[in-house]
Length: 185
Image (tube, rainbow, N blue to C red; front, top):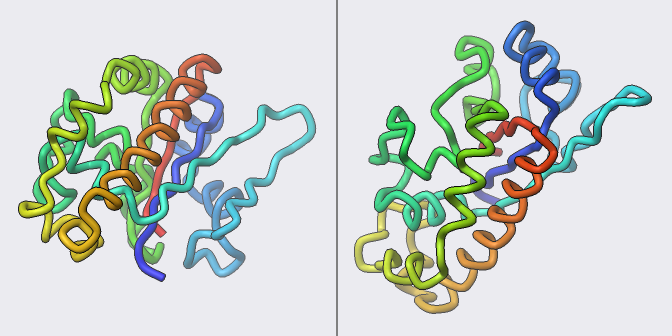
């Protein structure tokens, strides 16, 4: 098991609805008991609603944050709007009080405009830049910790593969003028 991350592309109207009434998150994303994210991300839709697409980042999320920002989640500054770590966990939270009831905390969001900006910035990143940012000796505190030194190049490839998926996810979200939400589970 362990801590994984999931991102969802959602229509702007759905983000607005979540911001207005966060109990809709329980209805769309979480199990009946409201306590734990649904691993299948079986997002309920009414007829005619836009589809909601998900991206599962497995345990790569903090390694990606490190490659994008130079820090793991424990030390990165999500309040800085220029921090590319915000592509994973934005620091902008849907209903902080309600989120305390969920197992790993907060549901983060990006508006349509923020999503488009992140998509453009992620699209401009070359793999060589990410390779240069990878430093297993400094990543002991980056979740899941042990794999960076132990697995070296294989762990880097794991991150690069998920980065490709992250780029494609944001490119499509921007093309569809969608917002993005994310959470740990």
